[in-house]
Length: 256
Length: 259
Ligand SMILES: Nc1ncnc2c1ncn2[C@@H]1O[C@H](COP(=O)(O)OP(=O)(O)OP(=O)(O)O)[C@@H](O)[C@H]1O
Ligand SMILES: [Mg+2]
View 1 (tube, rainbow over the protein chains, first blue to last red):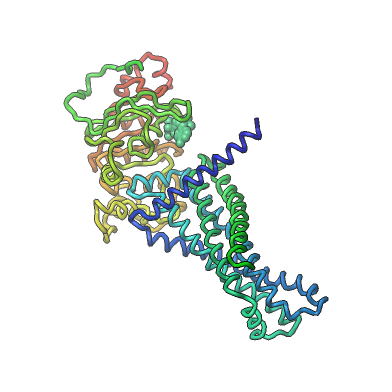
View 2 (cartoon, protein in one colour):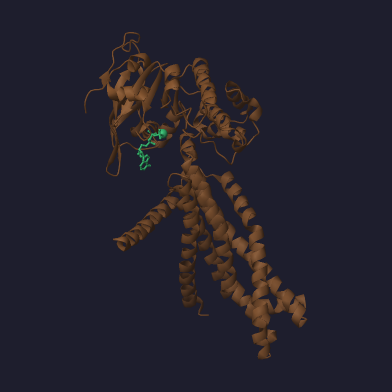
C-alpha cells in the first residue's frame, strides 16, 4: 500500500500547487497592490543572495576554464577558450547553477519564514488586521524572486566570465580587451535572450514553491523544518524540468 | 444534541441584556473528526464570558470561526447584528476592527519591531483610519495601558514571553474594539506572570469597557475574570453558569475541570 499512496500524494501536491498558482494570478491583479512590501522583498531577496551568487559565479568561471583548458591546449585551440567558456556559462551553466544556489537560499528561507508565520498564527493575525496575507506575503515574494533571479544571474554570469578571464590572463597572457572581444563575438542574442527568459521562470518557480510549502505548513516546529526542506527539494526538481522544457523550445525556435 | 446542563444561578439576570455576539448550532469537522458538534453561545454586552475545555476540545477552532478565519460547516455566527459568513471581504474587515483577537501564542510579527507590530492594524484598516500618518500617540497609549512604553523600539524576540503577551494585548487593543477574544491568555506563562496578565485583563476591561470572551483551561484565570462560564465538552456547550455554581456541581464531567 506504500507505493500507491506516495504516487497519490505526489499528484495531490501537483494539484494543490496548480491551484496555488491559479490563486497567485487571481490575486496578482486584484487591488490594492502591495508595492512597498514588494520593494522590501526585492531588497531582502537580492541582498540575501548577492554574496552567494557572486562567489558561486566566480568559482564556476575559474573551474570551467581550468578544466577545459588542457583539452583545448592539446588541439592547439586555446584561442577558442573565451567563446567556448562564455557560451557554456551564458546558455546553461550560469543560469542553472546560480538558480540552484538561489533555490537553496531563497526557497528554504521563504518556506521557513512563512511556515513559522503560519505555525505561530502570524498569518491569521494579519488576516484579522485588514490584510490579505496571500497578497501581502505570497504575491510580493513570488514577484520579488521572479524579478531578482534574472538580475542575479546576469551578475553571476558576468563575474563568472571575469573569473574565467583571470585564468586565461594568467595562463595564456590574454588581455582584458581581447578576451571580452572574443566573448562578445561568440555570443548572439540567440544565446542571451532564451537564457534570460528561462531565469524568470526559474525565479517564479522558486518563489512559488517556497511560498506554497510555507503557506500550508503543518503545525509544529517539525512542520517548519519540513516546509523549508521540501521547498528546496521540490523547487530544484522543478528547475530541471523547466530547464529541459526551455532548452527544448529554444532548440525549435533558434535552431542552435 | 442534548440540552446544556444549566446550572441555575440567581446573581445574573440575562434577559435584560442584549447579545453582542451569538453562535447558534455551530458545527465543524476535519475529515471525519467532528470537533464542534452544535455549539451555542451568547456573549452579552460588557460581559466577561469564560469558555473552558480540554486541550483539543475545539476552543481555538471556535474563536477562529468567530472572526471568519475558518469556515464552519454549518451554524450561524452573528456579531453585532451581522452574520459573519454572509459578509463580503470589505464588510468583514470593517467588522473585524471591532473585534480584538489575542492569539494563543501572541502571534507578534517577528520581523517587525513592537512599534511596527502595533502600527500594522492601524495602517492596514484603511477604511477606518484613512491614510493615518501620526500613529505615535495611539501606539504609545496602547503600550501604556499594558505598561510597556519603553519596549517600543525592541524586536519581539528581545521580549520575555509575558511581555510578548502584553504587547500582543496592546496590539489587540489599539483599534479600541468592542469585543476582545482571548485565546488562552495565560498559556505557556509561569503562575506569577499569569496573574499579571489576568490583572491586566481586568484593568483593560474597565478602561475600554469591552465585552470579552476568554478561552482558557486555567482554573485560576477563570475564577478571577469570569462572570459566567461555558464548559465545552464533546463539541457542545456542556454546562453553563457562574464559576461558583459550576464548581459546586456534582456532574462528573464538570467536576473534572476543577480538580
Ligand atoms: N486546520 C486544521 N486541520 C485539521 N485539524 C485541525 C485544524 N485545526 C484544528 N484541528 C483539530 O481540531 C481539534 C481542536 O483544535 P483546537 O486548536 O481548537 O483545540 P483547543 O481546544 O484550542 O486546544 P488547546 O487548548 O490545545 O489550544 C484538534 O484535534 C485539532 O487537531
Ligand atoms: Mg487552542
